[in-house]
Image (cartoon, rainbow over all chains, first blue to last red; front, side, top):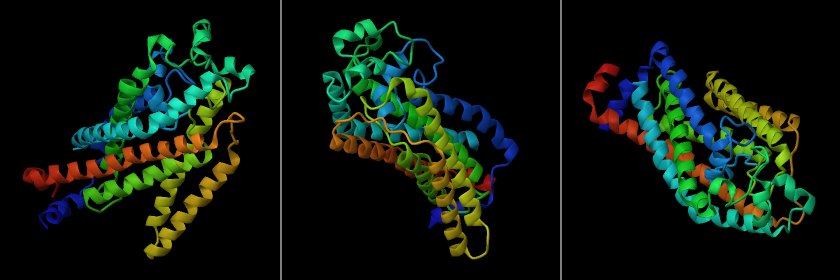
Length: 69
Length: 267
């Protein structure tokens, strides 16, 4: 029951938008870049030359359901 | 606070990615290997397609190298990356990086939603987010554009297939946001919830009808292998989302319970 008490306060207080936004923009961009490199890089679009990234994460890309090649 | 969530989300994603790697290694790799074996035997793909795919037999792969990126593709030959690497450390890296990235994004959305749109506890919010996220980002796009094993898909349509896949994903996600907004409006929660669900269904069915059908499964490709690959793909991604939802929720809960100062600041 200690948990319920702990979360009661926490439920009522949203993080102010001004505090959240910089994180959302900068960290969000970095996160999207990570997803992009696994899911798409050197497939339909390529930031880097060659096929090294594509080949390295090849199986993960297929199994995660992204179009690979 | 957001930074703290971000770190917890990335940790949860990393763990979920390693779990997804386990599922992928045990149940995902056999159908991938079988599809590559078929492809290299040249059985399902018509001869004139072999070059387009770039999935040439090992002997021809060397000559396919000078092709531009995105078209040249060969298993176990490209840039000296072997099949063992692709199925081992490559798969692990892919799953872990994808998991951490997804977990981080998940945490950022959680930080926005918690206390603002959701007044549930941390674990419940994370759980609901994971279910809605999996349905809208994975399951519904999959129904329109399912995962394909190696040997399925023409190299020259990768651009179209990628665009359509992400378009379906984006439309489904937008539809889910609208559906949640509908479900939260109205005093009768049952009624609003059902209306929200219907709104989602109508929007994604329309999106699915508008976007073009793509089916590039070669004639003669074994149906059971395709089924096996696609079902295990859904399970792997489910592992990822379930892991993120449950582990992140638990980490946030634990971090709140252990830190009375944090609880007071939030109060």
